[in-house]
Image (cartoon, rainbow, N blue to C red):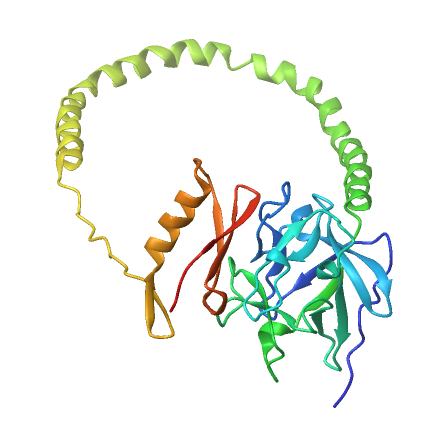
Length: 295
């Protein structure tokens, strides 16, 4: 198999981390601890760009350009399915990732804390909006393979645009100087204009009866507005989790999490671990947990 050249990771530079679909890892809520990490279409935003802080041989902390926070594991979990989120630098091993290169030019990002489990996507697919998690290595698993690419300095690109602007202004200057030579020729049509103005006015008056059609158009528009709107049927979803022959409704779990938190909340991220009879959650940046019994 022919090897593909790898991107060399250097300090003080920023990179994108792209899935096989081209969508990149981005911080959705990079301004606070517990902010979720998902895939998104690359739009040259700092939330989509990362620096790699070297900790050892091939081991890095992955820092978000917008917030300065690090890629971390929710509740420092180690199990398959543990979600990734952003957190301030606490010097923990859960914030360390080993970059493992493949001959195809891609990399696996292995957690130093979770026994080498790989950064993966929740479910099968790497589309926009997919949440990131860790999972044991799956041979041939494309959702665990990533492409690291250096981001070109946006400052340099902006400077090139500014340098091109004066050149465009210089080319336009001769057109402005030629304008005064045409002014005398523009005065001659004045006599013709006076003669033609009256017939034009009479022509407009003769066409006035057409205005009677406007009310009909208004009635037609009103009739359209009064037409009954289509009634859309809402799909009711009953989502139940079963473990050890015991079932728990997801809706009940969400309501119990809200009750446990005890305050109004804008956003909750819930990580359910049936084998521990626990639901871990992050409510508006605050971490907590509650019991969920499957026995």
